[in-house]
Image 1 (tube, rainbow, N blue to C red):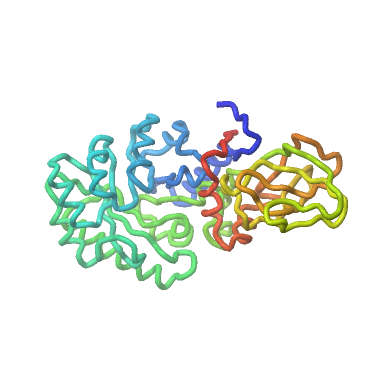
Image 2: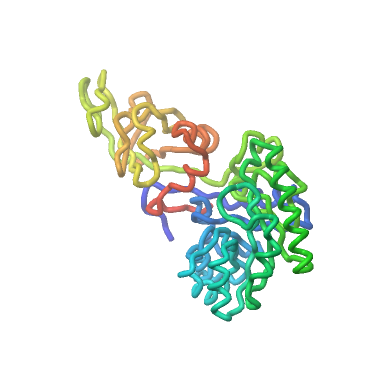
Length: 360
């Protein structure tokens, strides 16, 4: 589809392919990759690109509706739902042949009542404090499952793989105990997985036979030491264009609340991206964007649909000039995240669906 809106996210599929190759090389050919493409591929929309998805035998999403969307675009391989589903979603799980992570007795009972064959991975709670079966109760849980429920995987999730090695090793030890107990009941288990991006890079002993690359798949750091471990290329950049230009005199108020008053004659550009697009109000009054190779400060408050920038010092500025919100070089995703006191994940995931994605 042709991109007509001047604001868009550019997604570099060649960089994505590079990252896949680097991650596979890092974990070795005997470990499969299960890319985490939840939240619309962390905001990149690669979950809508069938040619990308078909590179993998199994992909991971957050919920059942995300899995259904993949089926609807034609993905026929395994789809794994990371989070404990709801009872109301069981019909979809069966209809669309979705593999689900489970740890709830009540949900397992409802699955058994259907009498329909369902494939699951059992989640072990090793210290995340979210969901999961206690490691020492894994035998009890597996034995409680109905005969129509086939366990093909067992998994856990590290909570501090970027900051606390001691705690992570405690989690890994607990998981290994649970895996051994599960094997005593089930025999060989098709998928054993624990490592998302940070554990993938920091704990080779947590690779097992499947890993779940998330943020690193998209070329961004999940921790301070990410790029010391692996070479990656960021795949996304956010861009817009100048759609209105005017010169105003000294003393002119700019934007809502009159939070900025010009101190001299000023050339003002309006750029059509605002907080409804995911460009937050934190960037009001002072944050800079790149125009014609120079930084231009935002003046006034970021509006729902646009913001204004002072382009007085930008040479030959004109309507239609490109505006770089982040390009991973001059302005990085991490810099935006730091400004908002958050993480790069959140900035990526909250770019709204009204911003078109342009794949290159």
